[in-house]
Amino acid sequence: MNQRPIGVFDSGLGGLTAVRQLRRLMPSENIIYFGDTARVPYGNRGRETLLKYARQDLAFLRSFDLKAVVVACGTVSTNCIDALQAESDVPITGVVEPAVQRAAELSRARRVGLVATRASVGSGAYERAFRRIDPSLEVYSLACPLFVPLVEEGRCRPGDVVIETVAEEYLAPLRERGIDTLVLGCTHYPLLADVIRNIMGPGVTLVDAGAESARACQELLTQRGALANRPEGAASYYTSDRAENFQRLAALFLGGDDVGQVQQIDIAGYGP
Ligand code: DGL
Image (cartoon, rainbow, N blue to C red; front, side):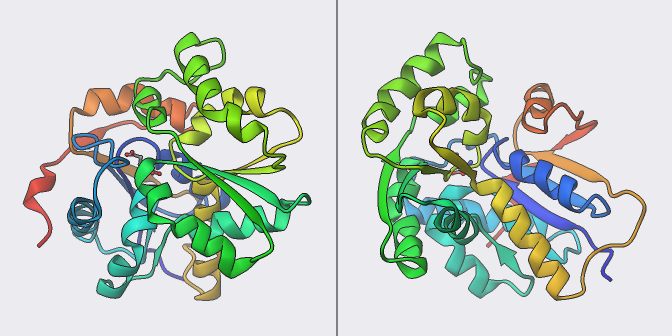
């Protein structure tokens, strides 16, 4: 048993899709969440910048006495996870391996799609993980750089003509590929699940990378005998920009749960 909290971070609100899963799977755990809303989106940035931001995000989270960290950001997971893991004495899980594992299990057609940020697709990390896990899979990757800013604006529901137009334009070529499984490789994208499902059709199963990372964290803590034991855990939320903005949209990402108080911090004061 281990009562210490789990730390979770993302560039913004997207990682809350992983928090939602963590809370569902492990309701006894305490969670500390940091969303770097002052610097979102990460998805078009270079590796050096991403590593600098990720180290600061992690340094802030490590100001708490954590037992594990979930990098609930596809872009950081694809570009920096090895460096972060090498530098950390607490276990760190990302989104890539768990999502790829799940997609490989689900695909009958052996043709899978991946949608993620430009930096994630450009890193090739998802493709490498697919090759490692099952080299026979055909993988079609697609960067969707406008998705994150639209989701952060709350433009994510079916019927919203802006997101529907953008999504149709991005996804139409992927629909022609005969895939039966699509990895939502950015933690913001599960908010677009209905829009994406309407475009891809019922024959395509969506894999939520954030949710899979939560499952991987649960497995890790179970193996280590490090699950918490209390009637109900709590979550605390921190952001690098205005708390009101975070609060306004967070319930959407958490499936209706109110986040309560959100604290703004100065992220520039953390890290090497
Ligand atoms: N939600 C993050 C990801 O999974 C970051 C997206 C962004 O900031 O561009 O990639």
